Length: 176
Image (cartoon, rainbow, N blue to C red):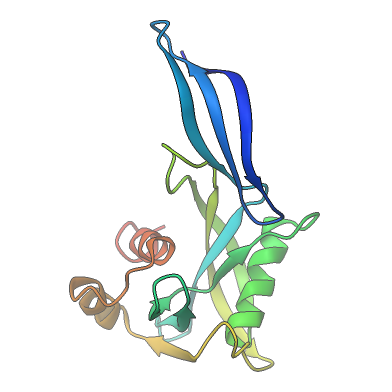
């Protein structure tokens, strides 16, 4: 039996993220007075992009929260009223300047299902034509990397973004 929400206290709400304290009843009757929940209204997409040489497109993103630059796959939120497929293609163009071909949704998961209902969708695509420049506010570098180099980067802790780790391992090691 899934625990039941009995009440909700709003701690914070915004267009981006919401924080609630729910009163929750568990199967055995135990009641937890304050189960904190980080709620997201919209899904997020991450895209593993391959080229004709079977290389992977990575971006380097400056991250305020961790005060670091991180190697990642292109990713971002699904805008209100937008399909996840459209969001994935849009994010790739914004963050790399490339269009995509053969865009396929390969996985759906919750990265922190104990405290958050956030949904991540992993896509796989082939690189299309380079039609523009990337957004320099979000990305400082775009590179093509061999699968062997990706494996080295993973072993050396050079890729730390959970979204990127999941997507790369699903495509490179699970064959999705």
